Length: 150
Image (cartoon, rainbow, N blue to C red; front, side):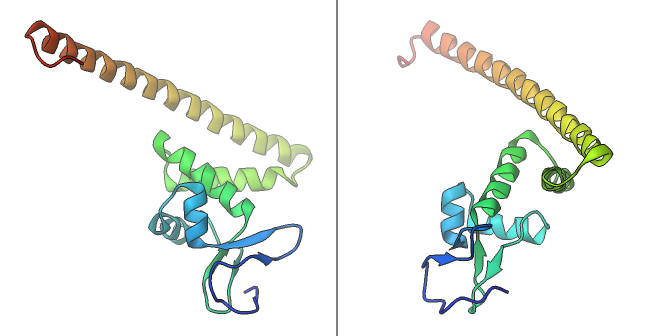
């Protein structure tokens, strides 16, 4: 637990050059575009761990914590499971220090995630095209039958 002087609100804390300014969960949620509840869920699932806690027990997050949350947020609409998210985060963390054969293995795993993401994006594009086609059909029916102008 990283001590702070007093936990009187969303003040700025400097925890050194490696982590930067600390922010409470409300600011982190706003900055990443996730709800506080979602961030707490991701913490319970082991995807994110606050870098520190205030003397009052409040979660304190850094820019790297927000980067991790952003990765998770971007994986969610692609249908990745919590386990897959956890695995990718571990790979990304390990790549920063891995060397040699271990680095090559992590790069292979990262490539698998890239392939999975690309495949899922293509599937979403197909779904979107189908949905747009359906909306166009409905618009044409409205127009044909004198419905409201769109």
